[in-house]
Length: 213
Image 1 (cartoon, rainbow, N blue to C red):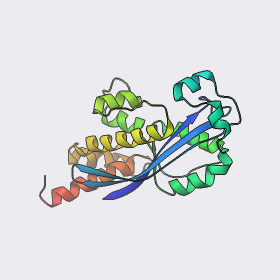
Image 2 (cartoon, rainbow, N blue to C red):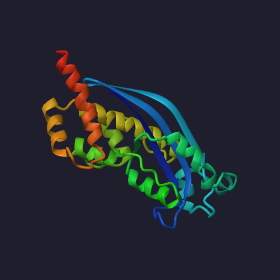
Image 3 (cartoon, rainbow, N blue to C red):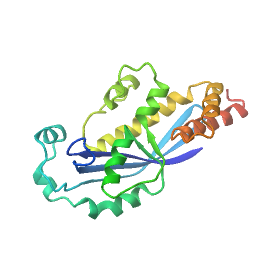
Image 4 (cartoon, helix red, strand yellow):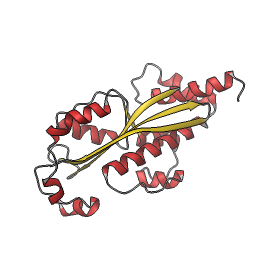
């Protein structure tokens, strides 16, 4: 079972989706393949751009990201790159950490993506219920993934991709009966993670059918 996803991350001038603006977008398109408890991934393409927000950056955002007003003054406006972003994302599921934050900003910039949205924060809360914290960096520490806190859009999109794959590997270690129960309970419910767990179950079921487990 293989599926293509797009991991997406935004950097913004602040947290208010109504008043703040996007300053950078990073995305990576990748394919995952499930074969029993084994999860393979293949990077297909990556895309990034700075975005001119039409306002000066708060000093704390400059310090956090390393992005300057001078760089943004030379960058395109969001309206100039929206079509490129839409073509890159296509109709594939969008993966992000707290993805609704990113999608809310895109909606307020007239880019209302209707793709399935997969939140690695939510996925981690299901698979790692006893984690001390669910930030990208802390989950990376828990799962042995390094460099998960650079605060640049493409780097964070790549980190989210790595976290998603690591969480798929955690899911693939669950007993087949547990996955079947998760999928039974979520049947008929509009749950964005449902397809993720169904893919993992299908991969394990094929291996069980072949006598692999």
